[in-house]
Image 1 (cartoon, rainbow, N blue to C red):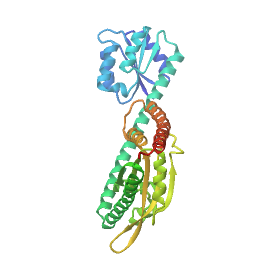
Image 2: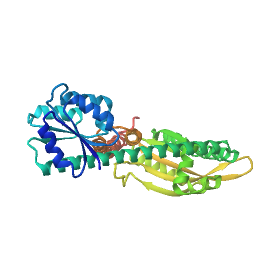
Image 3: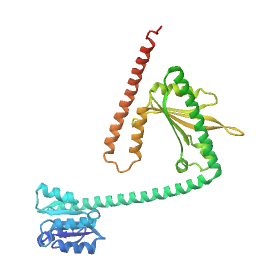
Image 4: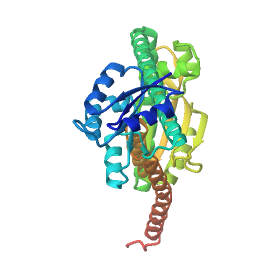
Length: 362
């Protein structure tokens, strides 16, 4: 049986509550705030709840609540106020201090039992949830330490470092071909199909974590076979049709094979994400052989990339207020960006068309 502490300066009230609750709980009683705190120190480890009167001599209920809050007990043991006080501002003050519930005088047996029982069950569930979360945090920290240790071992291995060199070479190969296309467009059409290129190699920790998540062995052969995004490039274009034109020209080049394609521009993700993803098999030319390496290339407009960077912050930043509201706003922005990109493209086409129709100067 759990222990309940009843704190009230009126003996009649204490006895009434004892009679209502003693079938289910062990009842401890105190006449004022000072006695209540003494009982707290004595029984803090097995107190299920406290029923506390507000108006008492020597030390009133507000002083007790303040003391309990400073000691951190209000987060561990629920306090229910027993009072004839009906003023909304008093109730609001108590709730702001952290009390769990109110029981009005005169007491109704069924209400007292249900409020006490529900409050204790709610606090027990909350403590269990907090304990579960804390255990999960410890498990994640342990997993992260293991991943970091294995990643460091992986990074020290010569075959792994050679593999990373080969992926890096594949990135340079794709980037060079894209820059050549950019130069050609600049000469022939007096404009560039893309604004910038960003590249990255997946970190050893990310490689280990992804292989472990997929249930794959952590070996060089497994990385080659099971991961498609170790080497990645992000190509930022001005307009959607530049994305498709540039991607088509890249795939048509000699020795490049398209292994996979996901078009999140025509079919955006549920959160609004828009981008064109290609998985390419790209040749690299080493001192004594030619190898093919997988490279992921993502194409976005400037606006799409700006949106994605903001969404990335939301995904990985912890303790953000109003997350659901922000997600909704981002989705609305993504839809607006999709429409705006095509409107801007249409304006560009009109400008280019008017230039073509201009009479040539003699």
